[in-house]
Image 1: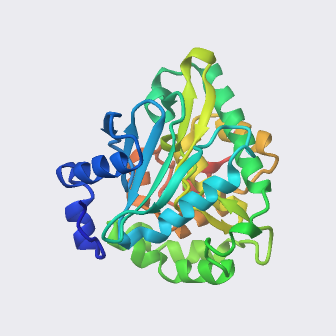
Image 2: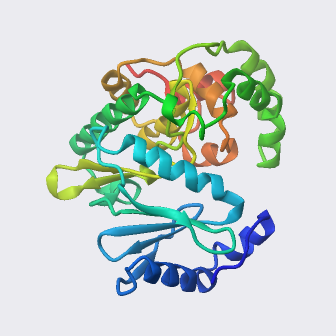
Length: 309
């Protein structure tokens, strides 16, 4: 039902096209005994993801991303029932056709935080930040060794060295102006990242887009999802998503998050991890978040990750 996808070009042609994806999703649902349930495709996300009725979610992975499917299923199974916030329960996972794989999981109740955020009053935002910080702290406290066979990078310090070597070229491809590019090497050289330090299970994309809330219960956090990019590494790496996509430089929120989490991280360290992150896109962040008072990395670090008075 679904064509083989083994290259980026095939991915771009097939995965975003619902006319191609939906027949395969419908066929797979029928095979899984859910053929009568209506399918609603989610507009966000890198993979094709469908709500299957009110109780299930089907996530499809082409052969190109087969390992991501294995990661998603394994991590979801590992964290199930062990965090203070619900995560999807895996009902089934396996191979489909032409190299495609799938995860059938439970559907989390509530509304996506990214959509709901503009309507949430300050007290509700503070409650969500508190809940989210406790959830991330619990995730980082889990034993990650049972996942070491499926999660990278294996050698965290070597991973950072590789990211550092490619940081300028990575941002240049995304259109970052030279005035910023020329400051990156010196800034990274000036920031001491912990070597051979604590390692934790990382979500890596801890952001509003992957959190669910319940507006009927004082804006309680009701879900955390999307574990396919999970890694094992320095816990501070997850605070890139927190600062850029959860608290987003809103006064007091990152400070509250760190207090509830139990650790305070240096703003310069978090900006360094922002530049070294696998999905880093500094031009986009500069458009979306508050501008620094001057165009320097130190000012940017304080603006986005600073500890407010």
